Image (cartoon, rainbow, N blue to C red; front, side, top):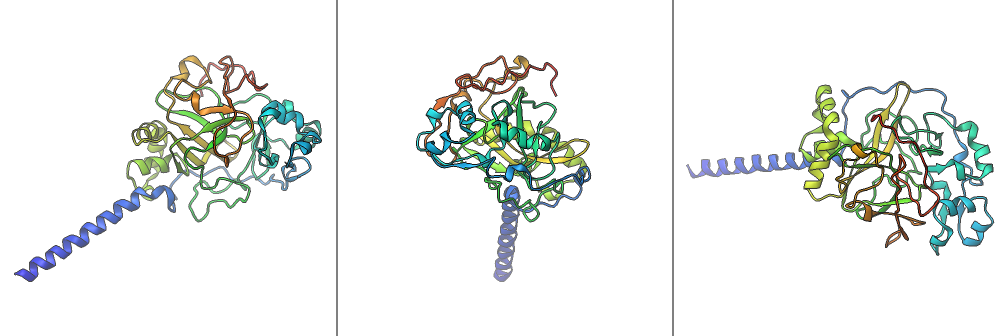
Length: 347
């Protein structure tokens, strides 16, 4: 009788440990391998990808190591317009070869002439210059640089994630880092304030306490203890449609200030591309009603301008002074007013 009781207790212990391990595995799905073969397929790859682009030309996109070198470089006026020479201090080098967001009206003439024939509507390979992130997100007089290696399979796993030596933050940004960003109006109520990472924008955002995922659905599965690999097509679509708000509410409840999505996939009729998104959780105002791109009082202290680096301690030198009469986030303490017309039709 005693032996049976001992065997029963051992069996209960084994089952308990197994259940605990299973639960922990579900909690860590955002950092493990994914293999959702039932997810939507992207458009087929096009064959017009040409490499290398002028973005790899170090004469056009240099690394500047000192003020004296900057004074003698064609990028001097651009750096002054975007950051302000007076804000640089000793924080060299300036790695222009890392800029992925460019203000075309300030670009050196030589650079613009060299890349103008390479500008695409949509990118397909690392280094492509393209004019629009999506139909709802239109910064005037600007260009983007594609930082992922190529238009890759729709679903990323830890094993097939694109290998790109130029993607500096493949593991995401550490908590309380300052990151250069771009943002255009408008965001839904209780949905967060959305940024794309935009190195070279001159506008810095502090991520606060942050958590990193590959995309929106993986985040939802983490917060709600769902095994991502078991999702059916219908389950995936359902989560995709509600993940933004649910992630916002749950992550705020858990004490986070932001969520990073390193491989956000968005696609058009012709091509699917990856983007790096940050969903701020501090912002509470419903900007859809006001069409105001500027942050509310909760978010404002965490946006600054001037020359800075994510690797530095402290904070960028100037507070953000945002002008509401624009479509996109801007700063009036530099020349970056970027007066895009407001659009009343919400995408």
